[in-house]
Length: 116
Image (cartoon, rainbow, N blue to C red; front, side):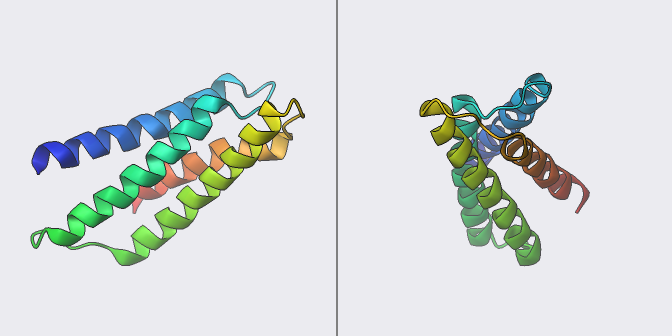
């Protein structure tokens, strides 16, 4: 169970790193990439699985308020990445706000995870 937990944390952190790293790399010409969309899915699923594992562990007290905030932020990242990815695939321009919303919201989720 410890290995599974560690693996899910790794996937979750790598997803956040891909989203924020790509956002920083394309900051001057903002866009949403396929990598960011895939990473948003990985972050959302791994986060939900981590909460599920922690709920079954009697030694861990789950902070449900933090989970709710993180879930809303993860859904925001996913929706922004999905819309941006679909626009990019259709050859339409991705708005600056959408691109910055994807990366910025992921960064905010990281800050909440670390500082709360």
